[in-house]
Amino acid sequence: MVRAMFLAAVAVAGWSALGAWADEKKDVKLTGTLVCGKCALKATPKCANVLQVKDGDKTVNYFLDDAGAKEEYHEGVCGGDKVENVTVTGTVTEKDGKKVLKPAKVETKK
Image 1 (cartoon, rainbow, N blue to C red):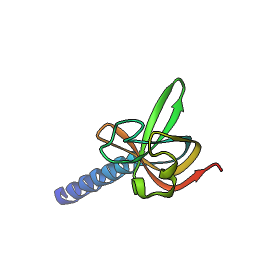
Image 2: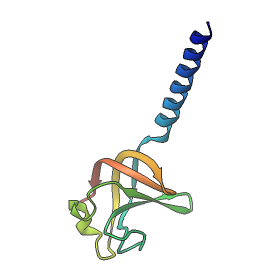
Image 3: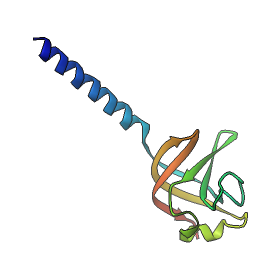
Image 4: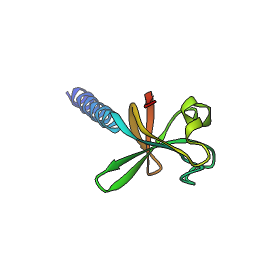
C-alpha cells in the first residue's frame, strides 16, 4: 500500500513538472522591427537578429535564436539599419532575463 502511494505521488510530481516545462514555451506570431543586436543595440558581442515589438508604450526585444549574421534577412539590419514590418512565428522562452524567440518562420515585407 505504501509503495502504491509513493508511486502515485511520484507520478503526480512528474506530471506537474512536465506541465510547468510545457508552460515555459509559448508559440507566438509577432510583428515588429528587426535590428542587429550588436550594431544597433550594443547588447550582443556578435551580430544577432533582434525583433523589437511595441507593447503599449514600451518596446520589448526578442533575441532570435537563429544563425545570426548568416541569415539572409540579417543583411538589411547589420551596420545599425532596421527592417520594419517583420513577422516572426516561433517559440518564446526566457534566458538570462532576455526573451528568446526560436523562429519557425520569418517574413519580411518587400
